[in-house]
Amino acid sequence: MMSISTPVGTDPDTFRSVMGCLPTGVAVVTADGGDGQPVGCTVSSVTSLSIRPPSLLVSLHTGSRTLARIRESHRFGLNILAWTQRELCRRFSSAPADRRFEGIRYEYQLGVPLLPDAMASLACAVLDDIEIADHTLVIGQPNWHNFDDAANPVVFFRSGFRQLM
Image (cartoon, rainbow, N blue to C red; front, side, top):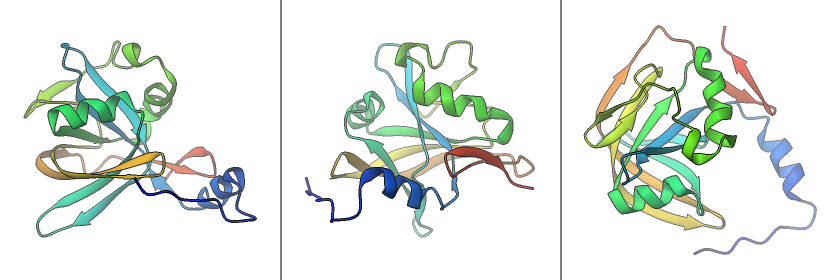
């Protein structure tokens, strides 16, 4: 694991404020819980990595229960949330892990639980993972997808959810 030290003058709160100036999409990463129950968490660090072949990168806290299941199953789901789903952002980031899917519709594709009402969903196979400080970068190859090109995304900007017009 790579060790990153904090340079003088760059404290975590200031860094969070600076990075908050960059609008990001919001997604829920999901995995099979191994016990019949899915697991998932909210992420805002997602990016397309390559078009040929298609691959993407998602960043998860190294202590995440979702990451543990991804490492065991070698599969994960990426659900890009629509503006109408912004309440799921909070639920999948702060609700108790065993209650995050309570009352929410989900379905399995290629062994991965996905949110069928999401703006876009992908079922991915893990190509690699890289630990950096307190996060792990998971590189995935999409094997299945679904999307609604008419939906409006939820965007995270300066510590709040925003809507694109």
